Amino acid sequence: MTATTDRGAWGSRLGFILAAAGSAVGLGNIWGFPTQVGRGGGAVFVLVYLVCVALICLPIMIAEIAIGRRAQKDPVSAFAVIKPGSPWWAVGALGVMAGVGILSFYAVIAGWTIAYIWFTGSGVVHGSQEAIGAFFTDFTANGPATVLLTLLVLAMTAAAIIGGVRDGIERVTKALMPMLILLLIVLALRAVTLPGAAAGLDYYLRPDFSRLFDVSVLNAALGQAFFSLSLGMGAMITYGSYLPKRVGIAAAAMWVVFLDTSIALLAGFIIFPSGFSIEGFDPGASGPGLIFAVLPRLFATLPGGHLFGAAFFIMLFMAALTSTVSLLEVPVAYLIDSHRWTRRRAVITVAAVTFVLSIPSALGNGAIAFFGQLPVVGMDFLSLMATVWNNFALPVGGLFIALFVGWVWRIDGALAELLAEQAWFPGARVWGFLIRYVCPVAIFLIIVFTIQGLF
Image 1 (cartoon, helix red, strand yellow):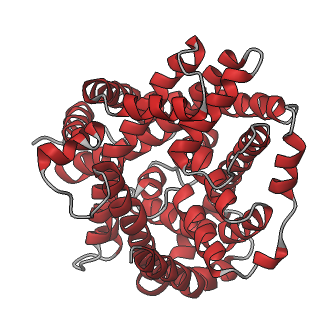
Image 2 (cartoon, one colour; image 1 turned 180 degrees about the horizontal axis):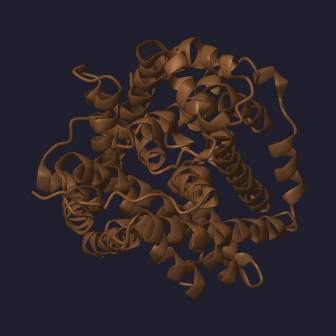
């Protein structure tokens, strides 16, 4: 294998911020956050969530970006560069595997959003709540259609990054992120004018402080905040490795967190006013049911609802695509840095392997008959993959990243990178305390509560 110069670098600070925010922004913001708000009692969940973002997620993101920029390598090589001859490279390897594993089912769901742009825009989805739910069940049971849609998503993702960091990822996210934010604002303004929207806004904005110290709310908020920002899977290490020294890490990370959190909050201003305008709306409805059954029912009853629905699913797909780009880039960066592959070869190979791995998730419950009984009783293949990678691999990765930066690389070593070229970083010592003590304990609790929730 010959050396390659396909690694690349960001063309601007804004390019990095939009790309990193695009990595964080995804389906979890648009349906995961509103679903957790509904289950967590509304506004009180939002308050706890914001505290978790500030005290746990932001420090972890800063740490990941610092590791990447210090080493200027993929997640596996980055740990080996900072701590050579140690087994810490395995943390990066977990991130690379998580990128492929998550993408294998995430692309399936992104494919659903493409289909629903047509379904809602053309008025195919209509009727009672039960009829719309049955339509979604029948659609996802159509194996060939979902497989083809998954292939389309992966092909679009590969096309976005095959041009490199500056001409591929940066260009795509610079185009998609402003459109996504604009669509969110337009849809939110429309949602708050619907009949019954006031009740939804009251639920979303007025906290029930009796649940403030509810352990389940705290755990859900902590988990949602962590997963929303795509931490622990090597994406921010990879994106940080393309970041020039002249860009201050702390300020850039704050902008990324601000954009991601703002988009999640905006999604709530769409979901809850829209949902409460429907009789019998359950604010704690599950993610797929909320997005693919409840909202299409609303769109079908609104004047001009077909256009409103199509715009919503266009927005959802754009959010998904900015995330699939970062998920694919993690293993691609590994093959370029560690094995000196060309970018084209790495992108095509990883996309092809991911597509093969995605087929059981795309086939849905039909995969049980073809591949045999799944290890988790009552769980389809897609749900199993989400549990393994989202619920376990990401927090385990985040835990070890906090331990590595706080106790192995150590705070002074990390701060040397964070303060390079007189970068702005207020509260550096506070960050050190959070990354050393608060973050590891909080993430460990996520893992413990997640395990308890399975039994």
